[in-house]
Length: 228
Ligand code: IPE
Ligand code: IPE
Ligand code: MG
Image 1 (cartoon, rainbow, N blue to C red):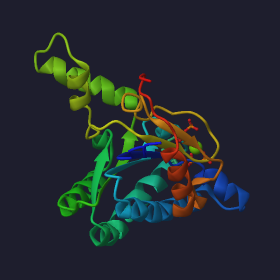
Image 2: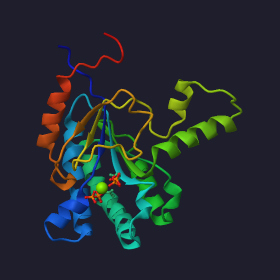
Image 3: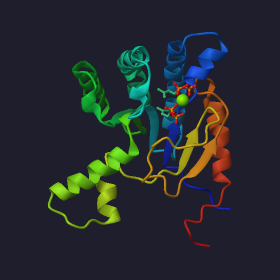
Image 4: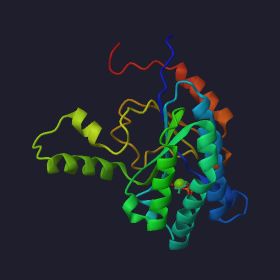
């Protein structure tokens, strides 16, 4: 059986709150542990010869519905995370990129995101994309509006793909942790022919070892893309 190519991996990092609750901790502790867990997975992906892009869902356009204190904590954590991770990005050759409606974030956070993108732009082992204030319907709607603003009255699939914020390549494998089996408005366009893997592991407990097992299973699958 031919090996299945894995160029673009996407992960819905879910279960931070439940991880904390199980330990009698506040949800914020779960988010802190969750931020730590991203490092090993990113390092694994950077060392993996096939994976070019890893896109992580970190904050959805719907997550603003959460209590104000949790949202504020997540914003601060994100800034702290980016500053802390710079060394890891540089050491492992990781280019950082953010997608989502970033203009709803504080100026300080927007600056930190732009600076991290700039400082890591020449790294080539992996592109790590963080989806921040990201919603797939919003991304697709913006792409179509952008094309209409250019004067187009009819658009092709290819043009929509190129107008999306996500540097365009189809997702090969999508993983969601925490046992939930839904997409929660993540990469709907890019996921058309993705393989899915759902694991009950809560995100802070998700390890490079488990990722390796999931990837091994993925390589055994037969992707037909509608053919035979
Ligand atoms: C994922 O963990 C992180 C974010 C959505 C920011 P959750 O916070 O959704 O954790 P659960 O689903 O409540 O356990
Ligand atoms: C999806 O998780 C968003 C992120 C992981 C950032 P949620 O916990 O917000 O999704 P739902 O509410 O369970 O669908
Ligand atoms: Mg959740």
